[in-house]
Length: 120
Image 1: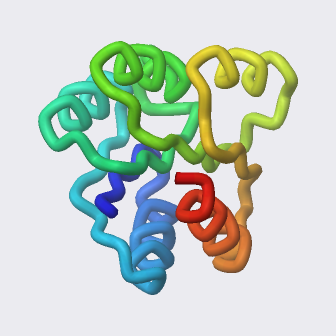
Image 2: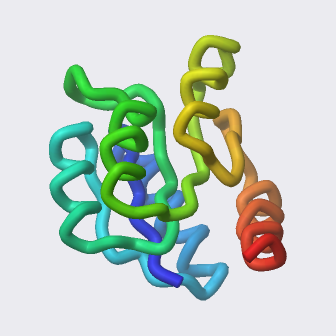
């Protein structure tokens, strides 16, 4: 399974990359802005996207999911600090596998990845 990370915090991006590699998955790319995310995801077509909601431009992660799900249907796990009901309900419009609230532990991510394998 290939994974793409959308995260605007470089330290958290590094941590998530290491967690995913520890779970024996391939990180095929990352992006910090919505526009960059859309372009790279359309090109690379990862199986799974770890998606932050707040990004460095005016396109948030939920909008990125909206664009991407019109093209194909990857699994999406949100890893975000946005725990408000408005963000969660917007994210539900496009579907997602999990919605994890930062900070997350390795065990939370592992559980989410494992439940993804059993739901496919």
